[in-house]
Structures are given as structure tokens and as C-alpha cells.
Image (tube, rainbow, N blue to C red; front, top):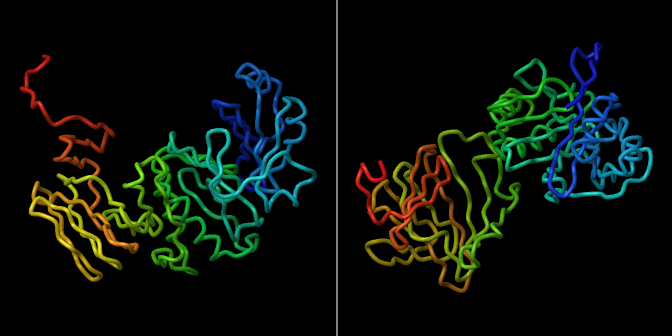
Length: 342
């Protein structure tokens, strides 16, 4: 990161260099010092220069010429810049190890953030200011195109549950960034951030899963500030299942059938379900479950549970154990003696 102090705003303007496989990325570049330029050259130069909004074009064109880099911005922001760019992107597209998060209602129509999921980090342009240090705020309402719409759009950032937030204006946050984002949004009195309708939520697909488990979902709780409960809507197409037979040691689950006629697979047998059914899955072997749609029509379910960071998930059919707090999948058999390997 390199910065320039802005006395009239009492904060720093920041630019970022991200070293990434497939080409390094610079975001919203200010003028480089000779020392910073040498360091970037030593780290492999620059492949992409991202401009998150029209006011952060800054020294992008000079840097692009110096390093032979390509300019990239959103489709809506491109016409507002001083000249052409090499690529435009939409919400969800990826480059430089980051995923584009399109935002609405802010100062410019095409402002976007960048999400680095492997680092649990978000990078913003003007969307939120790091001021005072350790906290966040929006720019003054008179500079926003639609303040309530902007606040609701920024819930997308919290829903990603980032730990770290790099900001173009002000002080970055390292650790607990999603809590700082939500505190900023929840303080607003012109909009209710704790309410959302299902039709306002995007469907999320899990492309890496086998086809029979590739159900899509709407993540409800993460968008409206849920902390102790998790809830999502899942759609099961014909022949799809929620996940393999499993039970949780720390998280009790409640499923509600919203539509369709799926089937519950449990230790006690297989049980047909219908809209309006409520299903409890306690934190013991008797709570093992798998929901399968063997009908010809889609089915939707609402899934609710408490959130336990130390939860352990057990899969009786395949003899696996998932220790969720460290993301470690093990076999439950053979069972080892306490002193094994010591």
C-alpha cells in the first residue's frame, strides 16, 4: 500500500499492489515514488490496474504505460473515465485473484469492491471510509446517488464475512472487518438493514459439488446481520440432495419445507415430506439426516441452526468427521488410543 495525506479530509488516500498468480494487480493508483516503483518492478511488475470508480482513476494511465499493464473497470464506470480501458467487468467476474462485487446507490453508478476469499479480505475504493481508525463511515449523504439504496447494497460486503478490509480512503481494518461494516450499516435510521425479502437475495451455486448435491441456496442470515443463528433457503431440483447423511455435534438444525415433496433420509428410515413440515435435527447420532428430492418438481426448504465455531460434523455412511473450526476432514475409523504416536 502507498498513501497520500489529505489534510482537508483528515485521512489518507490509499493505493494497493497485490501480488497474484497470473499477473500482479494494482488498484486505484496514486503517483508512485521512485522507491515504490522499484519494489513493484522487483516483484514482477503489473499486469492489471483496476479503477474502482471514476474519481480513483488517479495516475492509472501513466502506470499502465510504464508497466505495460491493462486497465480494467466496471461496465457502468468505463464511460465515465478519461479514456478507453482494456476490459470491463460485471458482478461476480474474477481477475488478479479477486472477485468483483458490484455496488449500487453510491457516488458513481458502477463502483465495485474486490473480494479475495482466500485471504478473507475486501478491497474498497470510496464505498466506505476508514475513519476514525478502527471504524467505518459512508461519505456524506449529499455525495451519494441514493443513500438508502447504497446502505442496502453494502450488505453484500458484510455477507462475505471478511476479516480484513482495505480502504481507498482512511485506515484499513485488520481483524473483525465484517463487524465494523455491520456497525456502520446498523447505525442508519433511514433504512431497515435487518429485513430482506427472498426475492432480493441472489442464488448461490456450488459448482464444485457433484451434480446430485449441486443444490443452489440463498444465504439469508449473512445479509441481515445474523450472529448466533444461521439461515438459508435451499432449492432442490429433481434427483438432488442437500448433502450426504450427517449430524452435527454442536449445531442443532431446524428445516422447514416451503414447497415441493422431498424425502427425509434418517437412521429411522425414509419419510415423505410436504410443504409446511418442520424437522428437528438434534446434536446426536439420532439427528443424522439427508434431504433428497425424488419427485418430478423442485422443492425449497428453509434451513436454520445455531452458529457454533467449534462444531464437528459426522458422516455415518462414509465414516468421516469434519472439524469445521480448522476445516479438517478425517476418517472416524479406526479409533485411535489416546497415546497413539506419542
